[in-house]
Image (cartoon, rainbow, N blue to C red; front, side):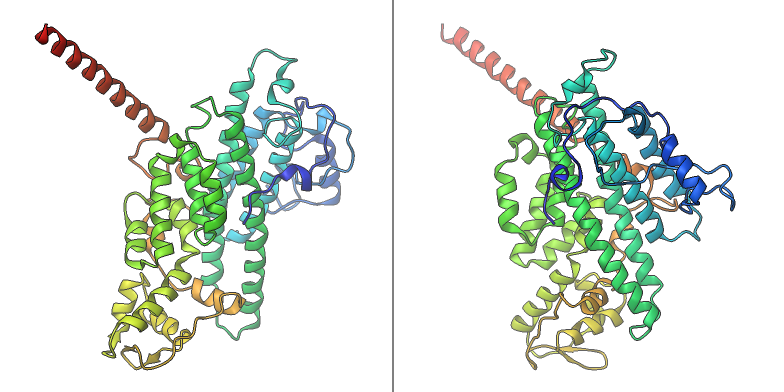
Length: 437
């Protein structure tokens, strides 16, 4: 998953950047057209006939360079739209699939990002944000930039959590490996994951560009460490590109607890230290969204752990219960299946190492990758201390780890301590000078 600019691939360059004039969720022209043609998403319908429906602007590629303010939503409207989408997915009935909610939300949020770009609210636009604020002095560029950054940050948090909800739903509804419907669902989910990962990479690229533009504004960058830590957790296997990104990272961001945690996880992953890896995932330093991002690496770290065991352990059988405990697998039966996929010698109650050649499962094979990712693990759920249906608002708002301070508060406290130390050193020097004299 790469950080790519959305401008070059999705949006036509516009000669001027202005503010949107539409305050509705959906521009009137699109709303009338979709109502006439019955193009309503189930989450937009209030009644079967569409009466009372709340339509939200869909994503559509720009085909001309004419800026139509009536078709572009204002920043205020975009904030209301995002809040409505998150609440809608959270309040949706249990009969609405997580995959359906994710597809709906990702399309509508993509349209939000499009409206942000054409107004110059992101760093990927040709003109600076201040140029879109010259006509109206009621809201300065810095405030609008901060509001825009908050919107994009919330999209990233929602994407991480909703992706896991969709995958958990797909795995729980699977009836068997040989079932045609299960296979179709499996391939559909993996394909959707690839598409959503591509959009998530572009969203990360967008917010990191906005951080660079607002590098002197601490309020705008106070979640930079959190966002970058999610990016690290998603890309543990891309060490070379990750090293390049880290070289460009500000030292203040590098020192935040979120980034330090992500780097510790990356070190454990690269070293193949599965014990330390899972300890970090289970620790208080890891929030729910970190766990969602790291879960996609569980299969690889478990396979590497079994390879190490096969090389280091003796032939004394190890029970599947013990394998499951070490590899954080809830069901010992899943641990047995994993050992079989690795061609280890499997008996009724356990596995014997060094008695057969270890064969690494082909994770490029969709069936194999899906089978490994469906192994039950309650570590991630344990991070989510909420009883609500869907993605909790605290996760989207950036409170995925209750009881901890924000990065900005930690940095401010550290600076206050440094200032106090300098003042104390100055006082000590002054007293010493007076004593000597």
